[in-house]
Image (tube, rainbow, N blue to C red; front, side, top):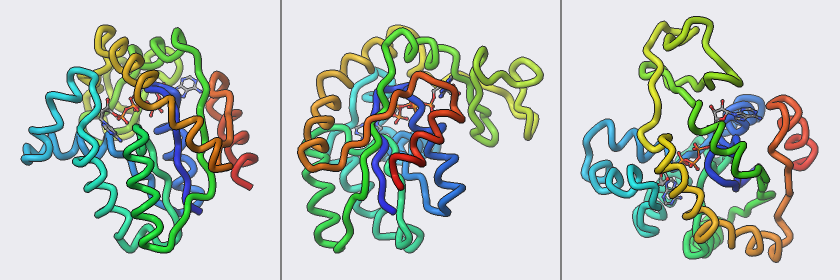
Length: 213
Ligand code: AP5
């Protein structure tokens, strides 16, 4: 099954994609995670992406399209994949259509997470990640047992550099201008499945399972 998770920053795409990836045994392909890894490794790609990410802007289309084209060819995508955070612009969606057409693959569903801005801001500003194992927490909605310490590996919990309020505001603006037009794009293609993402994590997960069946 080939899925796209579409939605604003903080909508819960990553949280839900991880669960579904484990249940279906297909990879979660997050362009955000891949770019952050490149940044941490100090590669040319990471250095190029850094200035866009820290400003809350999108990384140029050609850069992310090349990443996805290479990733989708890998053997673990044969059984399917979840695209988490790609595409994010209409040119990216058009490029994806071409890549899939050449590989004789197709998208089965696009899950569109709908969440209001005040909830998104609360989720993003309270998000914490383990610096060692990458596990995600939220200071109010999914807190660790001990403040600042990962329950699983004891690593330090850190805040993403783009999860500060000024950058969050910019990311939401960029989403509305550049990514929201994809809702109409995939609706016209008959692939859009709308989900109210303002609910408990487990409830949303059940809605996703219902939408993809
Ligand atoms: P990326 O990493 O993709 O960030 P994003 O889309 O902004 O999404 P987030 O990871 O912030 O949110 P999410 O929806 O995954 O929410 P999560 O599940 O973590 O991209 C970062 C940057 O990389 C971009 O700004 C851009 O610069 C660049 N980039 C990436 N892809 C690109 C592309 N295709 N083109 C160009 N540039 C690109 O949840 C958030 C928090 O809420 C967590 O703490 C979680 O615990 C909590 N939470 C989740 N669900 C619930 C719930 N139901 N109830 C309560 N709390 C919840």
